[in-house]
Amino acid sequence: MLVVHGLDISYFTGKLEGYLRAKGLAYRLQEMDTRAFRRLGRITGVQQMPQLELPDGRWMTDTVRIIDALEAEHPAPSLTPEDAVCAFIAGLIETYGDEHLWRPALYYRWAFADDARLMSARLARGMLRDVPGPLALKRRFILMRQRAHYLHGEGVTTANRRELEADYLLLLDALEPVLRQRNWVLGDAPTRADIGLFGPLFRHFHCDPTPGRILRDRAPAVAAWVTRLWALEDVPDTDARSLDQVPDDLAPLFALIRTRFLPELVANAAAVATGEREVLHCITPNAPIRYRSNPYRAGRLYRLQHEHAALDGLSRVRVTDILGVELSGPLFPPAAALPFQPGGLRDRWGRPTR
Ligand SMILES: N[C@@H](CCC(=O)N[C@@H](CS)C(=O)NCC(=O)O)C(=O)O
Image 1 (cartoon, rainbow, N blue to C red):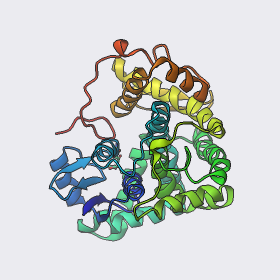
Image 2 (spheres, rainbow, N blue to C red; image 1 turned 90 degrees about the vertical axis):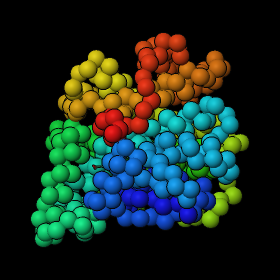
Image 3 (tube, helix red, strand yellow; image 1 turned 45 degrees about the vertical axis):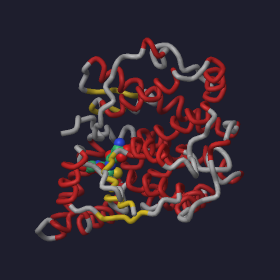
Image 4 (tube, protein in one colour; image 1 turned 60 degrees about the horizontal axis):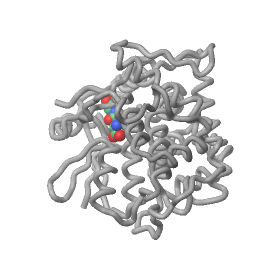
């Protein structure tokens, strides 16, 4: 059986669990402590969660790479549409879930007193169970560390917090009518679009008290989708291979990706390319978000650029129609103009592996 090493409050552990459930692959969750975090980091080269242990002795990390590998090794049921445009759009939504919703999800967990108190206690009792010392001290340490990394380090300030809340509220408004109509984001079967959105929506927005209350009140169909995906334990009878159209009702979601996510992804990649330490991104002029430029995120844009460059002309026209913007110019150049970037394994901050 597969063993997922992680935590039951972790974004990317939740994303991987959602994928394995949609895939019908049996697994067990092994809760990490700090010793396991370091030990498994030495095995895969990256200290992060989740880490996946396979029955044949292999180890994998990084959910994108894990899903790529398992999609290839276990073709059915597939979460990958054969239609290249649907597959590209699913990957784009997955990237938005992984990299854009990260900041609002961490904001809701660590900026609100109730949520921060609950989650710091969970981490102190769980992840830090092998660290000696009083619980109160461990909680304080967790709180300070998470706020430093995930609020301050991600550029969260009192000036931009309304924009982070808007990221969440507008996402719910975009998804609610869609998930009232059908079970999965792109159609009759889950794809990487569902899996990418599941990380933040399940482990943070659904489970944390403040965003959870908002989810239940504002978007009950999204709440139902979260539990629908979680309940897909047995081999599901859905398969995404035949999906060949991106539904029109996703336009509000693509507007969020176009206006709130892609400009930031590009600003970050530009900063990484020129060696600037900081990225300045403004959704609105009064709400600047300033954070350390992130090579891992630049790598995610690079992956999208390659996937886009591999599409034929007709498919690119379809993508333009779907997104409401042409992915061209310096943002999405043809394959030959793409800068060389080694695709090595990186942690969340882009540090190369040991
Ligand atoms: N790109 C990675 C991201 C994994 C990640 O960032 N995981 C977080 C927890 S959800 C983590 O391990 N953080 C380490 C830390 O806080 O030091 C993936 O897709 O798996």
